Amino acid sequence: MEPVYDTVIGTARLLWLAEGLKFEVSGVEHVPDHGAGVVAINHTGYLDFTYAGIPAFLKKRKVRFMAKKEVFDSKVSGPIMRALKHIPVDRASGAQSYQDAVEYLKRGELVGVYPEATISRSFELKEFKSGAARMALESGAPIVPTVIWGAQRVWTKGHPKRLGRTGYKIMIGVAEPIEPVGDADAITAKLHKVMSEKLLELQDAYGEHPKGEFWVPARLGGSAPTLDEANKMDAEEQAAKAARRAEREAGGEAS
Image (tube, rainbow, N blue to C red; front, side, top):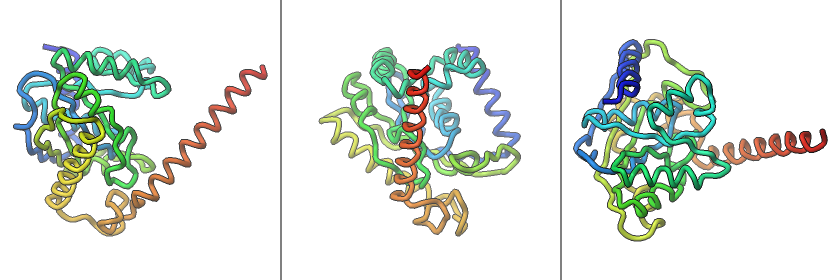
């Protein structure tokens, strides 16, 4: 029993009920009944992690998510994140968070990771980082590919959150686990292929994707940027952040 985690799950379920969210979950049988697993999740919105834990919850298991350090630094969310035993990620120095995740896996935990690292503005799968594969290889844990579709309608980058009673449908599909055999690059490529196929499967089953809607990929007639356009936007944003950081550091040295 984990009172804090159980309370958070109960609260989330009440909020989802109030929002009228309709979940369709498939592939729960692919979540390990016990033992370790690297739960690899696509990233389309800020609340993906809350939905990605549902398949494990249905197996009476909990996922320890890797999340940016700033969330743990908050006086509000920090104590909760630590109580839930999630793993802080310092993007400036990720070695410690990686080792922490491997230790969790060696203890038989499910660890949630985003191979894309950041939200995909295009809602297509971005290029994957190799961290999930390397964790799997080092710990011996299988990778559990998990794909979410529809979560971007609730709250995503560049658009206002919609937390009222929307009745949105959110689909979560878990693919067959990938065993850590081979090298990290090959495993990462296989993971990307498996999750791409699952994403297309969920999109096909989702129903109508209205033309021009912000949450619909350009490929399906929506107004979301293409993957190339989204990558360019991400690069520009990172460059702007780096420039602001350099300016702050220069100001600190001058004083």
